[in-house]
Length: 307
Image (cartoon, rainbow, N blue to C red; front, side, top):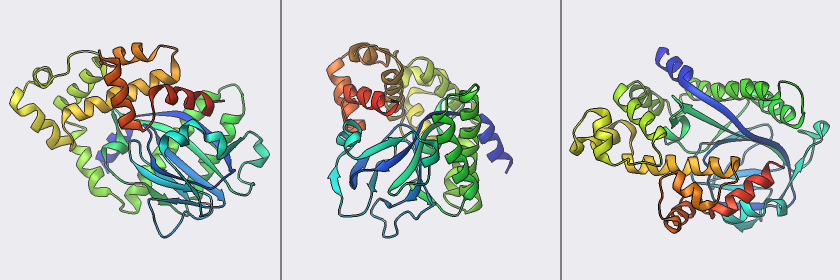
């Protein structure tokens, strides 16, 4: 348990967004994908995921880890089939954001959702690193209550709002980890990752990559950071993390690009350069390949979702 406590202490958890939603039209997103972790609390109606025979029940919480390709159905079948690009570009066709606090949890065909980051040493996405699928948390009234409180707090514009959102989002992340441990769900993956999260050479690589995303991140450079041979660094990194370093670097670059799209007015060309892509066309191709939507539409999507 001490190892798990150390992991939790090292987590940097950040609230990204949260809303109460009424479903206007039943829809299936065949390739849902996002860089943030998401929880969906079902109030009334239906949510299904990954073709599971048992749908999410009223009061259940569906957790979708960051970077995990998932099939999601909102509303009862038959549902319109769309891809991730259509989902993020034209959400207003299928969903209505509800800003009435009294209506939270009380409307037909409705759910609350929130997105958050959870990074170990502010470097690697914790839940993504476990390589676990989406799963349902049932009968956890304290977690459901926390999600409702986050949604209501986000609707309000009160003093201390950001601090309250941070504290409650941290509680939600911890509750999810506790659920995994208590129910023995994916415990092996948590235990495996707890070892490499403490490896000082790997942490040095994570930190260097985070600080040098627009620079030279070849295996030769990473080898010098970790003080291992160039021939061994790729094997060493994959042995501890399960992925090769260049795949990890691309994911970090694209994740940072998403953040810049959300928070800045920089051009797509500037953002590509900031995350290490000199060829804008290549950056755009890789971005769409990873997220299923063009970078420009990702920016429009985030503007719409924050409205």
